[in-house]
Amino acid sequence: MKKINWRVRFKNRAWVVAMIAALFFVAQSVLIVFGISWDYTELFNQIVTIVGAVFVFVGLVIDPTTAGTPDSERVMEYEEPRKEDE
Image (cartoon, rainbow, N blue to C red; front, side):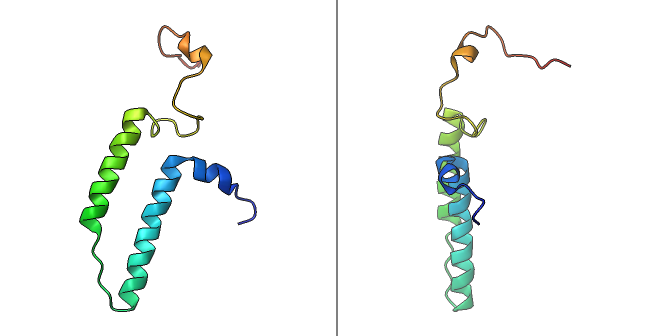
């Protein structure tokens, strides 16, 4: 756990959404152990759909490794997508 850069992880929105989902699953599992049934799946599905749609709309799912949503100055000069040299 010491070799994880938590600040950077929490800046990655896709990772934060995945962590929230994992926490919901853990909470549900713990409640089941105590005999409490909490079925949040419909609410969770709606929230994930909305959040996912927003992320796709702004392009965060496509490239979560970039800082922010704008393209670099170099990319802004492209006339067509760059092709990898083979």
